[in-house]
Length: 348
Image (cartoon, rainbow, N blue to C red):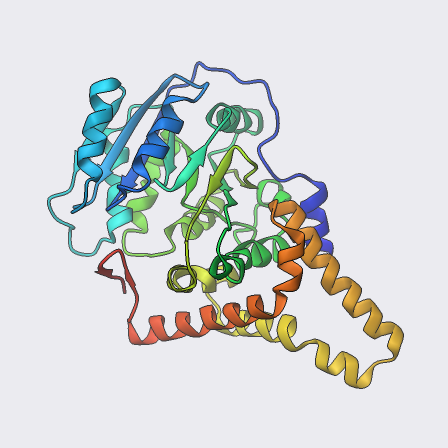
């Protein structure tokens, strides 16, 4: 409860800071079959207050209308460039290869890697650059505010922020040097270009499906300053539209939230799901009441910090815990039986 309260009161999102428009930003978008999203993200980028950008898109062998749509926008704005992938090199995952390839063509002082399903409004690019300069940061990552519409999303998607916000004081990511105090989300990662080009982190993590978290930890090991923030209405995303997709997606990375420890993930699930049993069996009434208060307030603080619906996160607490257990179980199966697939490709 204390961690979630700290994250709530420290307002761990991009603050209103004075924006300088001098830095050139390369916005790098890896895409694969994104015909439903690519118009939205391109419109958002072109509408940004921050105009000193180039937009590089890497198409990873899409077989829908993604490329056709991108070419339409290239005719409207010369800042947009399209790169293609003819094949995926051995030993690489698709997104990691796309990000690395984009970085080789980028000319910016800052490199902003952003997913095609993210939506932007206001001036998040300018704020991120200004925040990076203010605190001398080599990397800023933002967990977008999640758009949650269907019942399947309501009982799955909030689990990501529940784990993050209840376990990790986000202000410590910036203030403490320990690699364990690191988190990142590949949906929005702003790198200072000189360090990125020296380290080439996507190449280092070329075959890892949770490269974002590992890059953040690697930067900390290198004594580079990073920050992890929560998105407000300026950075939003609808990650999944149903229970099946959410389960497949979250089972890919849920264990990394626990330091790649299945034991830690299982203990967290058992304590948060069944912890009430010994409390109600063996402790006096006053402790039972305190337990309920602490549990409910943790959910409230996480919801407020994440800008999610408090009511839904409380009434769906049981299916949320069930789905979290399913994520952990499927992650175990994927790891040891290599059954994970994403966008038509097997990922080991």
